[in-house]
Image (cartoon, rainbow, N blue to C red; front, side, top):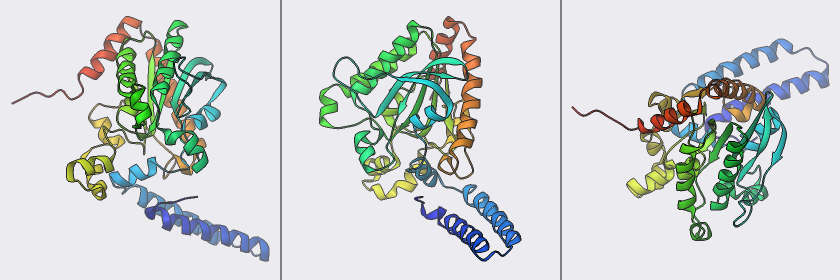
Amino acid sequence: MQSWDFEKPIIELEKKIEELKKFSKDKDIDLSSEVIDLKEKLHRLKKDVYSKLSPWQKVQISRHPNRPATLDYIDILMKDFIPLAGDRLYGEDKALVCGLATLDGRKIAVMGHQKGKDTKENIERNFGCAHPEGYRKAMRVMRLAERFSLPVVCLIYTPGAYPGIGAEERGQAQAIAENIRDMFELKTPILVVVIGEGGSGGALGIGIGDRVLILEYAYYSVISPEGCAAILWKDASRREEAAKVLKLTAPDLLSMGIVDEVIREAEGGAHWGWEETAVNLKSCVTKNLNDICKKPLETLLCERYRRYRKIGVFQGL
């Protein structure tokens, strides 16, 4: 598994444990007590390392190539997934997955950004950076959900919308702006979960909801740390400083009221434990869906509007 610098001592200790287990088996020597001691040491090391992460290190975890993406959570948590492709205007965008599924017995419309697990798949998925047709497809599926009174679950995992010439020619900014506008008026419950990177308008294109949740090591920001550093200081290498001042981590976002709940991940991040993280995500999603689905639509729409109007409001002296 790929690891970041701050994870290398953990990887090395895990290798030692595996080597000791193999040696014990090959030589038929009981080394169980030594293995237990090393496992306890590993647990303490993980707790120490992951309790002191900087904002930039949390950004690195959110970008881990082994981190589960939208289709992974759909496979683990949902049943009867039916993918829906194309925006009926231009074509299919594989960076944004949409479809219908069943979650804990409830029929839903689900959509989210999809990155690849290797270079070939990342190119196919455009590294999770959606085109205008991806956002128009998402709105098409949302309208379908509205027609059949299905709640919408949006999973955000993107560094940002694709900024290429073709995307701009096909109306990238307009597609995102229309989605933001129309999601405020969508007459069905919407639940948003940031599962990894949550970058800029690419995230906001499916980011308006009655509840917004975020995984423990995910981030949600108007711009990436590198982009912010390049603009403010003309030096992208100051990304660690930018990550700190952007207040993009889950605890920061919760304290500012931008997200409603932080979902605990497996120790060290979702890439260390897909199943554990998925179970925690399912519990929080189910709980919040039960809550918002009970509310009358008129109340839901009013609260959705007020939720976003209060963000960034301050009282002068």
